[in-house]
Every structure is written in C-alpha cells, then in structure tokens.
Image: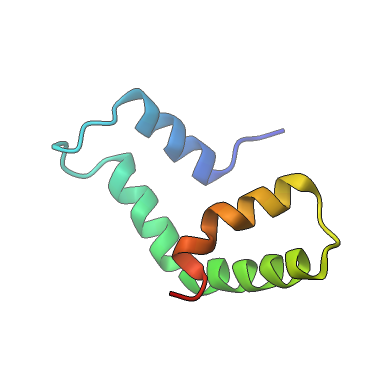
Length: 74
C-alpha cells in the first residue's frame, strides 16, 4: 500500500521535528489539514454520531474520544 500525503509529511516531520525550521513538513502538514478543515469536521461529525449510536470498533471510539476536546462541545 502506498503511503498517503499525510503519512509522507508525518514521516518527514518525525525525522526533523525542529520548531525553528522555516517551512518544511510542519508547514506543509498544517496547510494540508487547514485546507481540508471542512472535510475533517464532517468526518468528526459522522464518527461522533456513529460512536454515540454504539456501533463502533474500539479503535474508532478511542479516536473519537481523543478528538473530543478539539471538536466536541466546550
């Protein structure tokens, strides 16, 4: 299976995680996620609804719980 763009950028970031580096995979990853923010929000909404219905794998339920501070009610 080919790595996704997200996976490639994450791998590059893991190799050089410096915060002081200008540009690079950290900025690319930020732009990638920023540009897909509506889609990420839609994915969260669907996953949260599925988790609340109780028809989820433990992995999905755990992922939803980890993202709840970001996307859930404040």
